[in-house]
Each structure stands twice: as structure tokens, then as C-alpha cells.
Length: 80
Length: 323
View 1 (tube, one colour):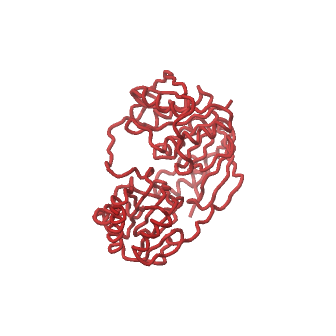
View 2 (cartoon, rainbow over the protein chains, first blue to last red):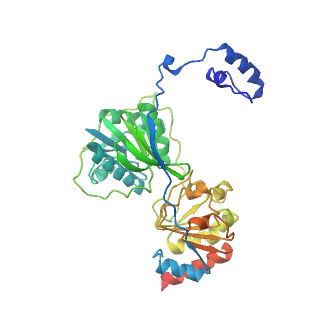
View 3 (cartoon, one colour):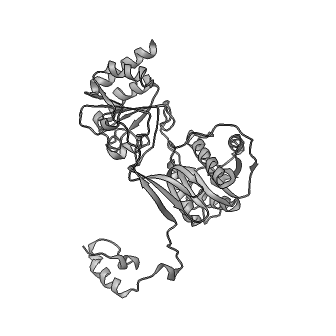
């Protein structure tokens, strides 16, 4: 697999594989543009301060029948 | 000091609960930045709406005019960028609804601002918590620069209550020029339902691929929803298979819900689905595969054939409600 970063930056790759060879050649011919040269600020504005795992849901239990489920929802969970 | 601008989305002349969630988050942010919370209402003939949202104790900027009659990303982005600048907004907030998810990244780009999406907690005016990796990690992130654009997860904040000192309403003249309005509104095609709105319902029953076809949603799941007074949802698998329209999709790429009771029927529990419902208070899973991952996060699991169990459950619920 050929990586075409420079060719893509130059807008050469148009479609499909037929252009790959041409794109590689063109990529070599084009200068690489540095963002600062075209006035684009790429300094990151988002900083990750911390990563943590979310609280785990405690696993519940299996109920044996529809009646048991409805009773549990009605009496324990007060959902119905 | 740093004002907070909240985009107040409205549907059919009303503010949905998600908008009030955005207002609540905006007020919280304003209390941390020491500025005012200002709601932006965009639309046509929005005087009544602007006055209504002012009742929630926020100042209001109403952008009124024909170009804003319907949500269009380009016109709304351009107008909001002007409002944000005029109001010296330090933080711009919207609920992460379908519109919020479309609008806010554009607005951030227009303002050259950093953005935090799907925020679940506001630490201070520039530090936020948000979920990453389909809810498997909580990142605390810091945004630098002003303004900062934030979309908030609709289940992470309580809806703002009506009250407080009524805010002022102003209507600046903001026009949309042809450069910013290249989109045109054609039609709003909507699925009408008498059931509760998915993101506002206190009970949600969702169906997955286990239901096998769209007809079975009608035969099995709808009666259960109606007996419970629940909203109907679906997994992505069911939506992709064409069983139900995609506005019912619950999950990472669909709606995020956190009802007091969530019943998952024939849903195996892919991580992307769990991302949209695992903050529900009580989760019930009905599935014939006892190894299904949904059982790991459900409070009550029932292993069985849903085509037998669901009608039985519907009858039991009816009995209970009738009693």
C-alpha cells in the first residue's frame, strides 16, 4: 500500500487506482506546504487533562418468568 | 464577564425538553464564568417563544426573519456567529440533538473556536467532561481561547425549571445575505406518532433484530409500549434492516436516552447501542440468548422467546394497570 499524503495534499489523487502511479510522481514534484506558510494555525486548542473509566453498572439478576419480572418492576424498581 | 450563549431549539412552536437541558447547562456555565446566560431563539415570528424562554431566567436574543423560518445549517451558523460576537460570548452551548450536532461544529469552525461535543459535566468555563470511545472512557478536557463551543449530552443535565427573574428580550437586526444562505428549505417530512417523544419519555421499549421484521414491531412491541405509555425505540440493527424508521434509533449514532425504565426486547447489546441507553435508571432485557451482552448491564434479565414473553408481559402490565 502506498501512502500518498503529499500527493493528496497537492490535490492530485482524483479517483481509483489508475492515478496512483501518477500521484506518486506528482507528489514528488510538488513542494510540501507547511500550515504556517499559508497562515493556518494548527496549534491544538483542546487538551485532554484526564481520562477515567465510567462507573460500572452493577450486574442485575435474571428473572424466571414474566410474572416475576412485572412484580419486581412494580415492587422493587417502582418502574411500573 | 464571559457571557454564555445557549442555542434554544424549538419544534412546532414549543421548546422540547432537550432545549431546557441546554438552558440548564448554559446557566451552570454562566455561574462559573461569572457572565450572563443568554438564549438565542432563531425563527420566524418568534416573539412568543422568545418571551417564553425568558421566563426561565435568561436574557434572550431573538433572530427573527424569513431566512430563519426553518433550520438551515448555513443561515443559522452565520446568524449565531454574529450573535456570539455581538454578545461577547465566552461559551456557546447547545443540546447535542440532531440539529445541535449539525450546527455546533459548523459554528465552531466559523468562529475559529475549540469545541467539546457531548459534554456530560461542566467543571469550569473551559474544562468539561465528555464521553469518548462509545462511552467507555470519560475524558476531562480543557479548551483554550474564546469563544468555546460546547454541545451537551441531553441526559446529563436536568431540564431548567421555569422561574427566576424574567430576562430581557432583544431583537437585533440580523440579515442573511446570499453568501450565507445557499441552502433552501424544501420540505419537512415527519413521522407522526401519538406515543411520547423518545428523548422525553419516562419509559422506553426498544426492539432489535430479534423481532425479525417491521410487522412484528407493530404486533408485539407497539401493544407493550401502549400498555406502558412508553416511547418506542430500536437498535441500529433493526433500523438498518428497514424494520422501523431511523428516528427510533437509540445508540451512539441515534438518540441518547435515559428513561426511568428501559426495556430492551430482542437486542443483544452491542456497545454502540449501550452507549445510547446505559444511563437509564432500570434496564430490563428480554432475549432468547442467555449469553447476550445486554444481560451484563441489565437490572432484570428474562431469557425467553420474545414472541411468547412480550404478549404475556403486555397482558400482565394491563392487568396491573387495570387493578
